[in-house]
Image (cartoon, rainbow, N blue to C red):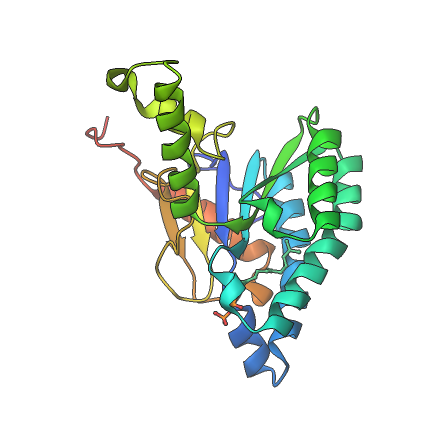
Length: 241
Ligand code: FPP
């Protein structure tokens, strides 16, 4: 790998489906939770490297609406990791001028976490250098249901007519309303699906699947994904120019 990517377009917004923590741990003969701990270190590295590469926004799928089905002990480990991340790492990101926000229904988390999420968003709102979005208790279907309810209630309140519902109004009702659509979605661990992640927003995203487990994913793998993106021809339904 070279150190500079000198051809092709750079994605503005990358979404990460961080998969394979459990399989990584199993292959090392470790408990699944060890995979999540190593995964949290990779989150640090990926944010740092994406920023260095000139990416402007990263969205990380850290906990889905379906992940509550996991054994209690695993959910607890993940929550403890998120709490630690919010109290330690995010303070560091804050110092670096990074804006951090969350998508997903946060009220399901313990009150101290909700308070910290609100505080982080408030305190970093004005930061412009780079943006990190953590998807926590996020699922696209829930987000879409919320959006439909919001649009229905706006119509009942006579804010606008049914005939004026368009892409912009749907966007405005989604939790991702203040970010551009992702250009590239990277999923680690070999599985090739979106798993309820940003499904409206990713309609024209380039999808990049790598067999590497998330705990093994490193800056060179991110460079590979960015380079692969640069070689893609994005036509958005149009023809090549
Ligand atoms: C998927 O791997 C990963 C998760 C459900 C959790 C993601 C969490 C992290 C990467 C660590 C903490 C993150 C932050 C932001 C501090 P899996 O457990 O489904 O792996 P498997 O498919 O191999 O079982």
